Amino acid sequence: MINTFSGNRFRQCARATALGAAAVLGMVVGSGSAGAAVDNARTLPLGNNNAIEVLQADTSIQSYPPLDSSPVSFEFFHDEVVSVNFTGPDADSFQDTKLTIGYQIGYPVALNGAVVHINTPSLDWEVGNEFGIGVELAPEFALGLDASTGATIGGSIIPSQEIEVDLSPGGITDVAFVEDMEFDGRSATVRLAGVHGSVSGALGPVTIRPYARAVTSNNDTVITYGVPHRL
Image 1 (cartoon, helix red, strand yellow):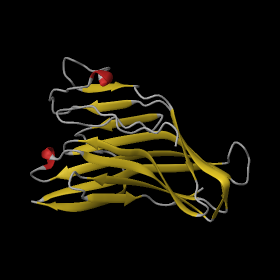
Image 2 (cartoon, one colour; image 1 turned 135 degrees about the horizontal axis):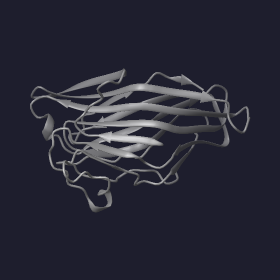
Image 3 (cartoon, rainbow, N blue to C red; image 1 turned 45 degrees about the vertical axis):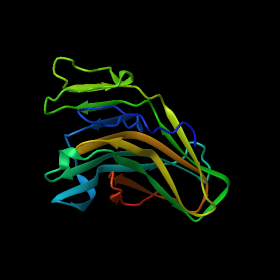
Image 4 (tube, rainbow, N blue to C red; image 1 turned 90 degrees about the vertical axis):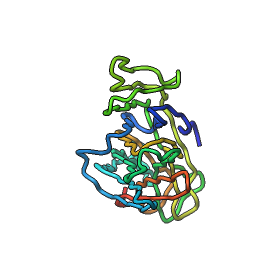
């Protein structure tokens, strides 16, 4: 794996995470996914009338003829909105929730040296502060902040990255391009646009299924899977 993005953190009241995985990628804390067309959602009760929901919305995976014209190559672009939402009386107090976004890639047979590439140009990110609460940022994230209102922060802080994963001889390969990113509070929304992927060395049809997984600090796990797309 080459230059995968994980582990960077900033704070808004508690913590949120700049998730770097797209040509245009924003993370909004507290604003949910209003206006997005929900494709998949799953909710898990957590006790004390609390619950966690993970959803995928506005999902688009477009396959294209590969630039190398090889019969064992496949190419696609991916747009999506992923949201994690807590509800209930303790929704604002949840901490250290981990979010992972990735693909399951299925194929009958892979040749020696077969790989999947995920290309993510520079990270553009945004945090909305709709409640007007002060924002505390680590120095490396302190750019693009409206100091008078704390309403919006943004910038391009993660360089372009390339993820390369070897394919197993046949079956399903899991590729996570946002992995175990942590946030605090009731919600986090990630908007992806222009994630570019390619599969080289796979024989037979290739199918890709996007997924999103959230794990609470108590290891309660919710996963939602998108509709499989044949490349």
